[in-house]
Length: 142
Image (cartoon, rainbow, N blue to C red; front, side):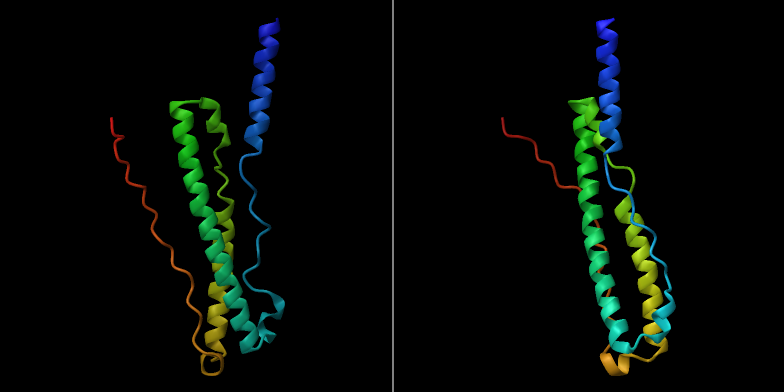
């Protein structure tokens, strides 16, 4: 009976730890807000620059989370299987990034429709998505 209690306790602990892996996506940001049509060119420009910074931050978080998941997968498969429960499959950063990019596309179209490029300059460039490559593994010297 003691062994069964230990097994059940271990399973409950692992399930609780698995529930903590990763964050949930933020509340969905609407693409268009009611006050968007009243924004002047400077405010639109500032909003676009702010959203570009959010996209860059979320891309960095996505890349970092991908690396952590790869590391946890390797550790879990090779050394310690409960590490697999620490993997984050929620893709919160990806969901948030897509919402911000949709809003950014709408703001860019509004910026162009108001001909703001003549007063505040061209639309700020969105951050580019850098392709992620796996690090090159070299055999250890014996």
